[in-house]
Length: 402
Image 1: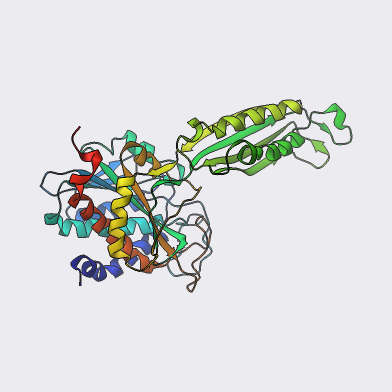
Image 2: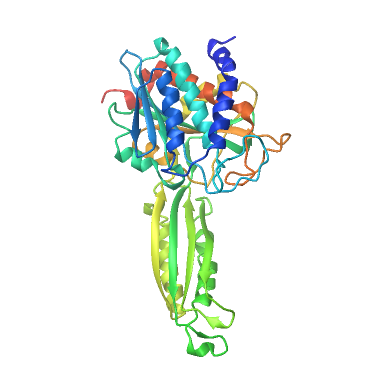
């Protein structure tokens, strides 16, 4: 048996135990204190020196002792404000908080990969930077970058893996180009003039302005931007009014704008600017005014072609079955995009859905769970992908001297 595969097999229980520990004790973004302690203790027991970044982030570096590039491997740490409804023994012990997106699995896979890579560093060149990043759900990557995670040593390339229940276990999705959407979050307050619902002519109704805006905004993705360039505008929250016979003086709307093309809000499609234009003009048509707050949360995640090709070559060894390596794109967003915007990177979707085991619900769902049998495959992708990167570094154009 392949020695790496054999070692992973020996550590299978450890991978699952780590994942279940993190699942039982989830913490929200920038509050991952116990999570960070667990990660640090594990790495330090292996002989790594650890560094804290961005409050709860943990970084460790493996130096092979030989010259070569620096590869960064990343796992996210934070959970979501969701109450888990599962009855499983490893369900969340922290009320109202749950690992409903697989970050528990990511940490477990990367920790065990760090163990195996350290045991096999004589086969490596260059350096590996293991990064455990907080607050992925609200753009924590940029804080790690600002704290210098891509420097000292300077990172040349980056790889991340995400368990993904929409993809069946036994499959892996590795796709060049745009793979996850950019995300802008908006908050709008529409101001009108309150009054009595029996005398609406004496008021300026922000409710009907809000209703019209929700409808009219949909023309952006259906009439103004090509349907070949994915754009989704969603309203997730509407607040206004106090009683059925009172016209309120304001209505608050919140939602998101997602896009799956390079440039996002700065591209020629300009989805966010179009949205602002429509909001202002619809409100004006209803004699209302509006305050608009836009948060540019994530840019689109774009996989580098050479890094994608390398990952596919690695996956062929780990997933030799026909049609096991597939393409996958989603309008959901991921702040790994910030790393890929700075250095060549690849983000991989590890299939974790299992219909027979009832593990098919979507991410961010209170019953979310994964097929844990895939965790060993994720570790193998990290370990063999790293080895493959160093073995082929001399043919990567972005590492060649200019």
